[in-house]
Length: 131
Image 1 (spheres, rainbow, N blue to C red):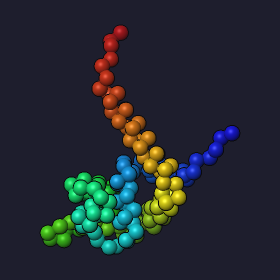
Image 2: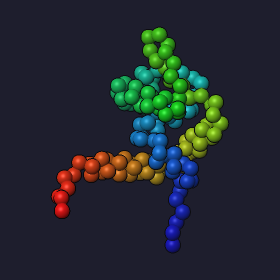
Image 3: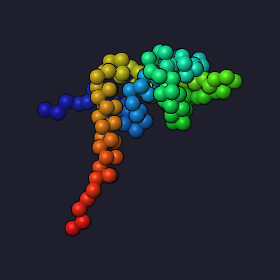
């Protein structure tokens, strides 16, 4: 008997197409919990316990993907989640609920995706014998 997946299809699709890593997801959800509140790279890094350089890359990738807004605050850049796009906001709301309820399934899906992407990349460099 086939058991239906625990994660809704739209959430699975979002993870597979737009969430490259668990730290990316954690940063997204951190900003999502504080809509409209700007956060610096240092603040996010401290909350996620990851280096600031990695955090800056995550936040810039999130901004490029349209998940957050970046603002130049003079000495530092700040990032914030805006609730302008109702459809995206509802999807991120659902993602947050799924992550809270099905942490293992969400992280496995992200890691499986990352491993598949890495395998495809490695396969591109395999030497092939000409026939």
